[in-house]
Length: 303
Image 1 (cartoon, rainbow, N blue to C red):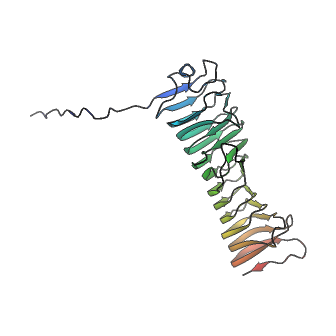
Image 2 (cartoon, helix red, strand yellow; image 1 turned 60 degrees about the vertical axis):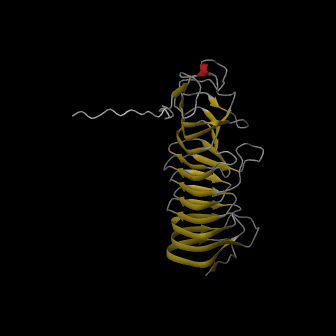
Image 3 (cartoon, helix red, strand yellow; image 1 turned 90 degrees about the horizontal axis):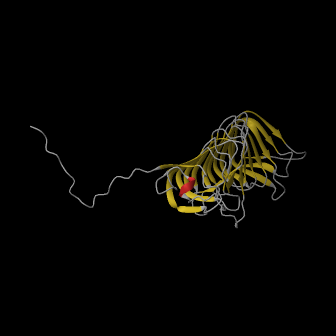
């Protein structure tokens, strides 16, 4: 006996909506983000996936589009133009932003859930918005400078062997990318470099990390790591060194650079370029060969 055919008799049932895919080609030549003529399938709408490819036309007009939530915004390797400017970034919201271009200059503000930077030699400037932090920024293969507004990102992951500089800067409050808090987590791979003016809760360093201001909660350094502090106040949790260098370059704003606790399996603690001396307030477990490269007359407090 055949099964009966069931029909949905609810006239209010929502119809399934397939988010569209549209491609920026800039054919109108006016740089207008909202001009349908600049896209293969009209301007982006709610839930769209947008590809920016095969064009050198800059995106320069009607840049505040933060009211439209996109699924993905992807700048591809064949795009040779620019997106926004440092003072007037493109404002959108999307689950994911992918930057995969060697030549484009990208200035873009979220909120985004995550950003992937795959490669490039152009300058990239991103932010989550003054009230929205990025969940994470993942750098896969970039070769130039990425600038992230201070406090704009919860987690920063920089891949191994990129030889790139990721600059996280203290942008002034009149800039739309400005904010004030630090990172939940930074992971810096071997061969990469992170410059930041924000503090961090969890730091995993195999490359070079330079922190201008802000405290560190926990830091883990491998054999190839260098952690340089300039005006950082202290390490509030635990320092774990398997090797590498902790270079304390702080000026004489206080007598000591306080490290609450430490497990030191190897590496070097260097104070010759600064005025402060390290002080371990809780415990310091020296579990291997550790070099203390100190200024003349410097003493160390080890609890």
